[in-house]
Image 1 (cartoon, rainbow, N blue to C red):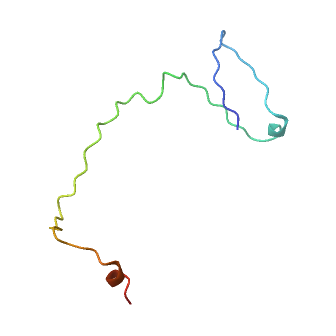
Image 2: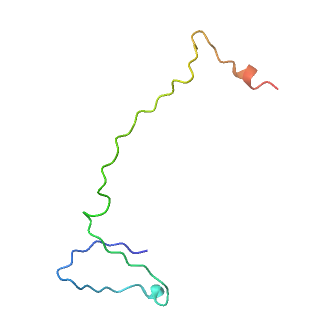
Image 3: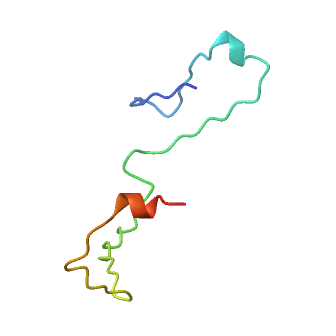
Length: 69
């Protein structure tokens, strides 16, 4: 893949492609760097998890009990 940025000084441009691209279908895309995604990005919403609340004061995790089988 080849990607390059140029500043054309006239309406017509030409460029060479690698030899291994000859005979293959290639895609050429041209757009100005300042055009494209002009939509304002929506503000990120703060994610909260309020559906579940547990009181874990005084809880001690017992790894041996958890792995017991």
